[in-house]
Length: 468
Image 1 (cartoon, helix red, strand yellow):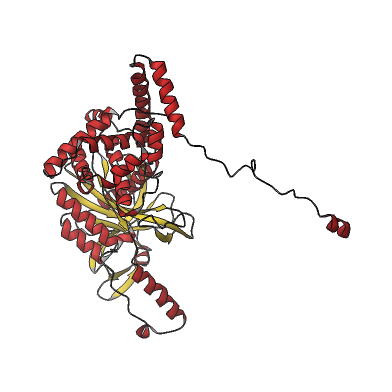
Image 2 (tube, rainbow, N blue to C red):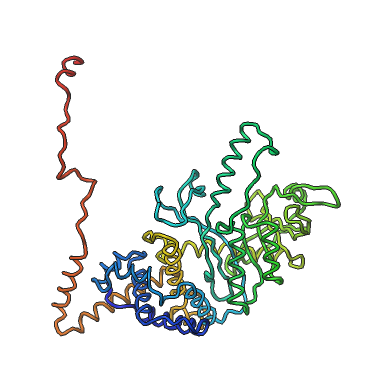
């Protein structure tokens, strides 16, 4: 599929983002050239499903050269990468009149090749799907779930601290040799340049609060990787009225009475469960068995409202803890159900927003700007005029894949219409075809043996005589 012009809806969206940025930061004015370049990139991502300058050049018939696109990506001072994503978020929230919602946190790995000397942020990490280890970039993602839209509102890359990594490996070796802890080197302090995932989550929450302080946050949802005393304290400081919900491990210790400590699993093993039908995320009717108790959690140094529940047909209980003791168990279950929407956002992001097929951009700036481009596309698809119309009519919004397919057809129609408007459309089409052919370079396949000198392989005469 080819395109000759930016999609009109894309240009309109970016114009609105420029206005929002001018209100937020009057000194930051995106130039017309930068706006055209951004529109071209977003249109190209819709057409080819990736962030790749060479593909953009080929599919546009050389409208922009790959080196020009890359130069704008790297060196244009008029795009204002530090603020454009925040301005887009403000625009979306204003369009859908979002006043309150839930914040959900999660992180994801983007696997890369084993040798990535120029790819910033790639590191060895455990493969959650297939086991073993892979080389990947890890991103902590923050999304806002409201009654109207679910939107990514913040992200940041996570990198392990090399000093702590070296200490862990050395400590493990010494421990294996039988050296007592008192004689082993102490754990070094984490560098501020390599914050933990919990610290990154705190920074994302602070940034969202700073830029969108009028949005009322009812609850903050995160999985057990983010459950800690520091995270609970940070959430209470940033959003005092919000309920912090996370999942407990069944081995977590809780205090019963004054001194007795037991695991969460032990405490709830003999309690009776209440069965009730829940309407999860306003759509799925699920029969859930549950019970709850307000217990002091040892690791969190605080009394929490713990809900033990399981879906119909399951044997093992799951455990959710909430910081607000005033919330009912039913509301905690429904609130924690919003955390699953992070997985849906990530899936859409990989499949439809160009990031899953992103050509590797080297360096710190390349990594962050590539992610911002893909998230801007997600914002564009969310506020598309057809989506706004559905919202006004009280109907469900379209999926990203459906809308993207429609936009591809719109682009094809626009391209054909542009060619037909020339005085000699056949000549213009032939010229375009020749230009596109000149941009497709011959690549020789290693799969076929044609054109290579291959030794004639056959049995040795001497060996044949010896072993026959």
